[in-house]
Length: 79
Image 1: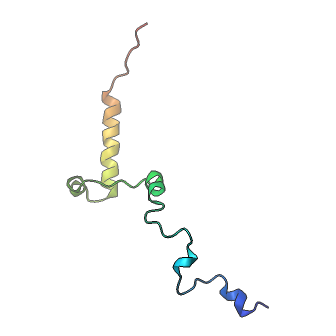
Image 2 (image 1 turned 90 degrees about the vertical axis):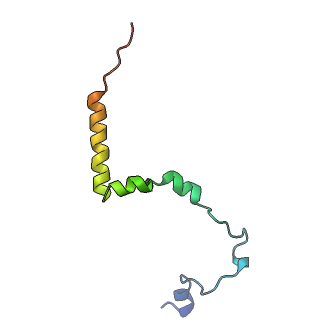
Image 3 (image 1 turned 90 degrees about the horizontal axis):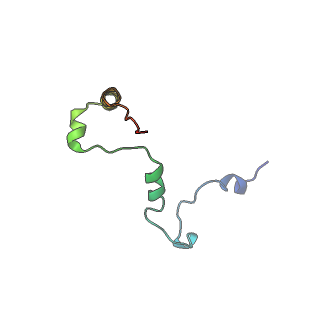
């Protein structure tokens, strides 16, 4: 049987001391990594007002991509 000490080993203490963190506290330690790996895009307020939801934004962007593909012509290379 496990004793009480082993059961409480995985629980967080109610209070931590600064000495528990020898390197100190660093604000925004992971901010750069999160920004690089995130796929969240923040729209300007005037753009956000034009779309009621995520689906409307996606549909508009897909339509724009479709139009761009239909209207652009492949360039010919000079030989």
